[in-house]
Image 1 (cartoon, rainbow, N blue to C red):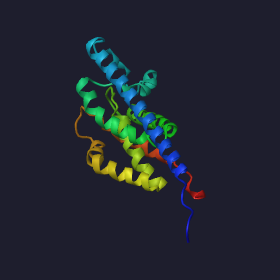
Image 2 (image 1 turned 90 degrees about the vertical axis):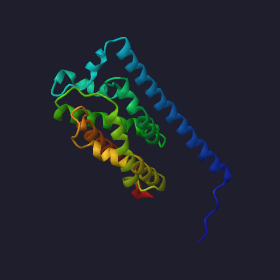
Image 3 (image 1 turned 180 degrees about the vertical axis):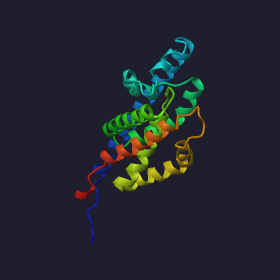
Length: 203
């Protein structure tokens, strides 16, 4: 059976569309990264680390809104530096296939990860690790649930690059590291991939 060749104009439009998505994703992730760096530098060198109070304070009902600020705060420049590369790489990959789905997934990750920390942790928790592990779970989950070749390829590449550190990161090891944020961020990412998956039953 033969199929009609896809017109070159249609291919060109597809490339332009994917290119625009990639540029939008790069701009979004780059902008968020710059803001996080600006906040951390201000906090360390001008605010006396007072912004750390916007981390997640477990079991404090009045601090529940801080689940939305905690992923964008860090406990020092070294903490921010360690999170920058995985945040940029995984965030870009998660956003490049659709900005609105990415925003929805980020909201799910933030809520699930933040509430998980709020219920189970015992220390003030902050840092983009919640989002990083969430993006990892979202990318892998998207490859599994949507079964599209590109998503599967991205999931395999992400597992190859980050799989071992991510799996080890959800285990309690270092008391200074919030494994709860890692674990529940990861769960939030998988849930985001499930709730935001494409309807493949219709073809």
